[in-house]
Length: 266
Ligand SMILES: NC(=O)c1ccc[n+]([C@@H]2O[C@H](COP(=O)([O-])OP(=O)(O)OC[C@H]3O[C@@H](n4cnc5c(N)ncnc54)[C@H](OP(=O)(O)O)[C@@H]3O)[C@@H](O)[C@H]2O)c1
Image (cartoon, rainbow, N blue to C red):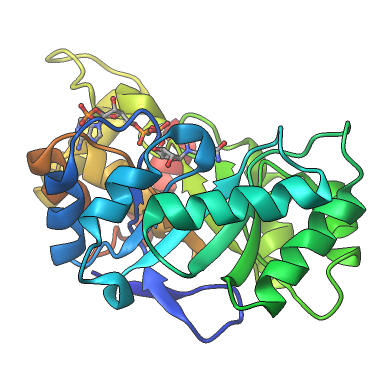
């Protein structure tokens, strides 16, 4: 498993993480992923999967990097503090590696939200602060209320079928030294469906490259995400077999020519 630096923190995290939205796989897929080096686990208070993550990491807390999120409905200052406390309880840990604001919510002044995030970091309950689904202006505004703490990551939807962030948000994050946690990197499984024999079009390009490299469609889709030095992909799978497959998306690299063919097709 290849590692990448989280922002400019000096902390290295796996370039394939384990997503847990709508996760129903129990502890085994998570444990297998961790064993294969996918030590970044992404969860959220809103997923109701923090407890199973907590179970999977029992006894190996220091080996994993836990990213969780405060819900966009809990962004008032004191609610952020309360949500964090509850997440720590569910996860069975005394610190969160990356605490992310799940969604911006204009009903709550971002000042109070970010001041609470800063306090959690000052108290050592949170190692790093991130955002999710924030555009450039929202990220800059959030950063302005964080004092000396830095927003180290933005978790955003990014996959071959949805490349909208390439226009401005992705280059902005690159410029700022922020990691992009690419969510829904398999387009919810749509990028793993084998096209019919002899068909043409973008999925046929994906299939051809999978055949050339002896990898699966999903592995190509994930490797394409992580070609960029600041992008980490966090696929979710309920199955041990597909978790092993997804971890096999790291440790090798698509050639520039293959990336170009995918960029042109999608
Ligand atoms: N911050 C946000 O707002 C936000 C939003 C959405 C997602 N996320 C995060 O990103 C993670 C991943 O996104 P996602 O769950 O939306 O979508 P995804 O990872 O793109 O796709 C998950 C779907 O693909 C299937 N799958 C996984 N690996 C596969 C493989 N190798 N071959 C074939 N099918 C495969 C899964 O089925 P099985 O489970 O049956 O394998 C599931 O149906 C989430 O779990 C969550 O942690 C964050």
